[in-house]
Image (cartoon, rainbow, N blue to C red):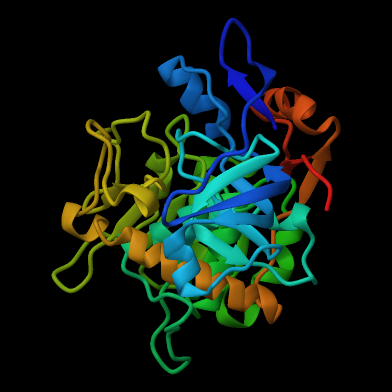
Length: 364
């Protein structure tokens, strides 16, 4: 089979080579890849550690084979349409004709969703879910808040990004409102996701930091905000976001989730009484942070992230099947495996503009 290896230097590029179709481990599923999705970490992680790798982690395709433990559960059969989250930095990633994922981060997709749309879902949805439901202890969609309880404001910076958008979808499914979505351009897809009757609102960051903070305060309409997600986590975006939150109290801790491990998050300007916690989505596979990562969550709780992933992927399959959840706007990059380098360079150049780049790898 063909596999694309991503090289971070001397400039970002890919090479194609031939390797055998992988054999599944006991608890693994081998998937014939129809579409692969892309994420910024597909090039940023490789650049940081100067390593070449098949770095794709978002898979959509059909089940080719599986291990003996998977067979015992009778959950998947050969030919099933699936989407999956491949363990980051591990062999047999999504940029290949066949890829591997552990059973607990594989979900069935119905005929009503295309492979290209399904390829936008796994990794980023998992990042949003861990941020909100594991690190901030908000209620998950399978146990949503009652409509009779007081509101829980949630501020999301970078709301038009795939991470911000999936966070909005998951929060809405959990009846978490009001959602204050901070975005710039390319945010037209957010309007159907926000419920104005529950106080949800869109704020444009392009008007400047002080105006943005003022508008968020107005949209909160007197409510205290103790939950926020910085879906960008770059160039200090978390600092003004932290200043929009109310300090922690004896009854309620204030959380701000960040998603880049490249920062220390220790600036003096940070809002007082705000607990910043880093989401490393790889904990859904490893159950642990890597040494040296900033602002880590409780190690004992993180151990059970793989179990949470199992529940999340099963419930995502249910929501996708009944129309309550969908993928992100996408652009298909021409060239299949040969187009991966082009797509990642476009991503590096900031040309996604609210879309996810996906690659058509195989045929049914």
